[in-house]
Length: 108
Image (tube, rainbow, N blue to C red; front, side, top):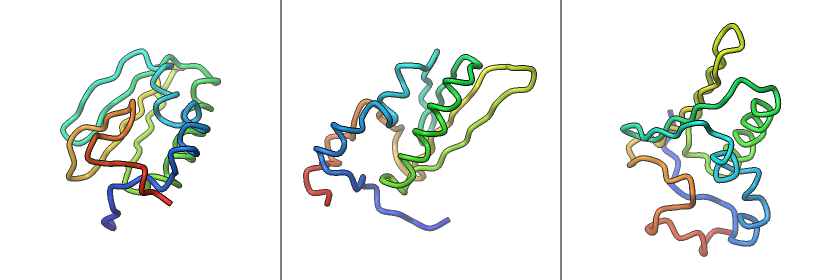
């Protein structure tokens, strides 16, 4: 796996405009959020609408935050949906915004 810089390519204005479509907006739909060693795990109710939101958020995030890895599990029998976010070699992901050391103001 390639090493990508830990940086989001969205400007502050783009981030504010798209925030509901990105991970912070997705967290509001999670039934639980659990920190992992290198990211976090979100669990969702088994809903087609929620699944679409998750897929849309993954697609948006992978374009601006190329360092993130996503693992999506949809359990059999209409069971729960689990999304695991992995930030290789980094502390757990903060889904409400970038850590203080990751200032988005310099993003293009």
